[in-house]
Image (cartoon, rainbow over all chains, first blue to last red; front, side, top):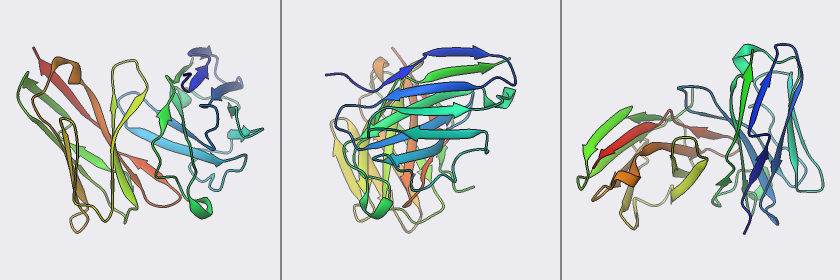
Length: 120
Length: 109
């Protein structure tokens, strides 16, 4: 069956431009997660969705970052006015169930291949 | 920072040997998960251990959790060249999910 897919796989942009990253979760998965991995760094949790709502947005690095999920399926992560420090691999994951009362799920998260963003 | 930390940062062993990597964290957790990331690939979930569990096995993997010390270890027995990857622990502390910096494991054939 199809796993989590992300597009584009690579994105090179100029500083100051806006970028939009897309994540297609596994069909039927209610929870969706965004992470960022900078070069040589660990994973950084950004945001997660339970259905279409995001209970906690405090992981987003700045107000230039936003994410939405519509129809309980596809999610987009938008970075406005990109900066060089935004360069990283952006990973998306989904899990079958979300947690209770807006908490994170204990279900297995299935990760996509990531989008490598390079800001020149 | 509430991020988990793995040690060692890098580990190189001969095929057939066991590999042990450790993870420490700072907050109370609901569960702790270990992931593997091969170069250029996405993350793969390996094993989840709940806060009320002390040890869990899955194939050649053995995970321990000591909540009093806020630490976990991942043991890979009889390592194979295909185990070469980065290994991350991740802690679920409620509304946030924290990943460590990872241990880079190289298994030499």
